[in-house]
Image (cartoon, rainbow, N blue to C red):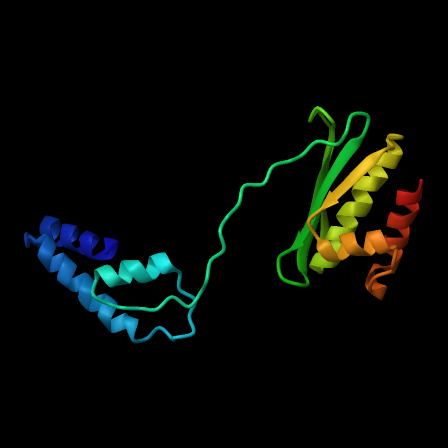
Length: 182
């Protein structure tokens, strides 16, 4: 639509031909109808996109369901404890990756925060490295009574079960388990 408005503006300014809004709308509708048939049925479409197409007389069925977004907030640890929140991710799996974390006390005061680039890794390795790095910083500063929080359920479950994960994590996992036990 913006392209058609832009063309109408240029047409008026440089060629002296005024395009009416109805003409611009007709061009947009023609374009949408011609491209609509080119979009495969398997293409993901949200409800709002389908409703927008409906305004132009093009009826499309949404192919993607959306979950409700819920508000999440940080909860402090009990008095006398620290909370270490970590996260790791990769762009691609594997791909360029990084991780980081933050350590706060029960009042929310930040003691430290960190971030690191981990080269080409998987999401799992990046998260494990972020956990290890955060725990290592706690050990360096003689901080104990730590509550570790991560959104990576697989690693959290492995920590709780004290089980060794995939062989690629063996050395990182050994470091994590040593740091958890000290």
